[in-house]
Amino acid sequence: MAYFLAGDLGGTKTLLALCEEDGGNYVVLAEQRLQSHDYPDLAGMLAEFLAAAPHRPATAAFGVAGPVLGDTARLTNLGWTIDRRALIARFGFREVTLLNDLVAVAQAVPSLGVGQLFTVNGGAPAPHGSIAVLAPGTGLGEAYLCWDGRRHRPYPSEGGHVDFAPTSDEEEGLLRFLRGRLAHVSYEQVCSGMGIANIFRYLVEGKGVAVSPALAGELAAVADQTPLIVGHALAGDCPVCAGTLAIFLDILAAEAGNLAVKFLATGGVYLGGGILPRLLDVIEPAAFIKKFTGKGRMAELLAGIPVHIILDSGCGLAGAAQAGAQMARRREML
Image (cartoon, rainbow, N blue to C red; front, side, top):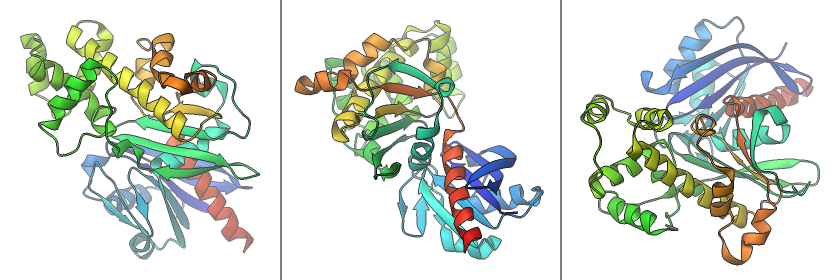
């Protein structure tokens, strides 16, 4: 049997799975969700997981929330450096594959079913058209897929770190506020978990919008304010939190449209990450698509592009497992 390890390594959480290769596909034998900040590095996390695993994997494939350069990758919002050769030496793997986490998500996109998606815009997908993927999580990940003659092949991007371009007076105020506090204002700083916290601070500190003493106390007691802001926005008990999400969704829609233009994503735009499935009740498809298509002469083209929200929180792990299964299959055939 060919056993391999698959992992989706994020700035907040990490998913690990022991898998068995099955004719180019895979079967999950054991899976665990861990908090990334609870571990000083990946090696310590893997040692703990493998100690309890029923089988020893021969190979491993990891989706990493950061750029992969040669044999190494660095998680942008966690500080871990992953070295492929060091993992091979430490754990005796025959082979280790590192891929950007959004490449892992993109790898899984062509196999997603209707039940795993929430459609914001139906559109008319071109069968062999390029596909864009972006995911606001701890940071903002972006990737794309191109048809290679046989299948859609995923490619990495660090597009979340490009300059933020406001599309409204409110967003211009947000940019000015953040410029006074950050060395570089990227889309990641306004369109992610950290972005939600930054938008909230702009409304409270930059515009002087008041929040209740109770909420102020809650926020002061936590290191990560984003879950609280989202929770109160969804509960409908805090206008500032609701306004924060409204700005966040406008920026997300505009950036999704940017990607659709840049990659000519006639095959569709897929929105992933852990935040969006929680926001389905406050996403207004018509308003979202108005911002998405607001690209002047490109508006008509964008109106025909499908836009989907990925509901499956394990999509990144599934993509890493697909890559791991392909790697294990190649080794078995040698």
